[in-house]
Image (tube, rainbow, N blue to C red; front, side, top):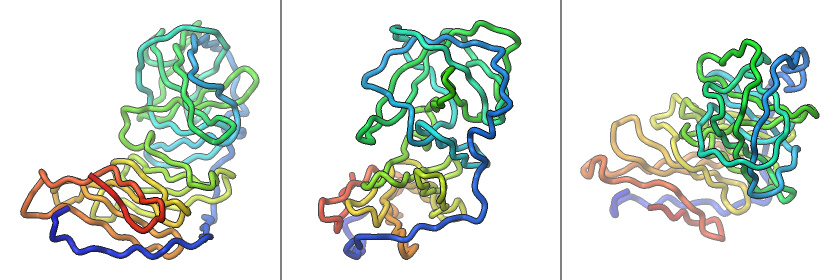
Length: 274
């Protein structure tokens, strides 16, 4: 963003905002996996950095759908991590169609994410060891759902996919901003009753980086790359009105003029970026 860029005022935040409910809701996660027959047993070795309770929400973003379920957090694909070994717990791995799957490489370590009692994200690593029947692998980069033998669900998170790990909870903990793989931005209620696409791929930019809620939850700031081939810029979206501002880099500076990773000031009136 050049020094000559016109300043865009941000309206002071309201204390409440409107939520939009789409007419059709995604299939409940319990229904999607109800017919699953556990003929394949997966035994992980796990290390956790904090207690990982199995509650809240499982939100899975695939190239064509957003699917809301019962428990942990977000997933899109798998990413291998360094293996760390500790205790064991039987797991069952399915794809988003409810078919039994295994990870592409046996004894590979992946990351699990969830929420602690205060709503903060905590992670643990999991090494999946297959006692095989005939394993299958999901096609098309579909998300992977992990279930414990008690029936509660995790989501295997991919840090290598530039969108699914950049989701953020609103300040009140009731909504999630979720950049999808097609460059769009969604806002999802953690109760599974409301979700809306607030920025669609038809816009003139592609959301790629961090999304940041303003202190009162009225705005979402984001990083995006314009379709004009220039560098990254930042923008913000007002949820109550649908108004949006995107500040791209100065065309004279080309791709070297980059802005990303926005942050709000405490009063919610200014955005800081670099």
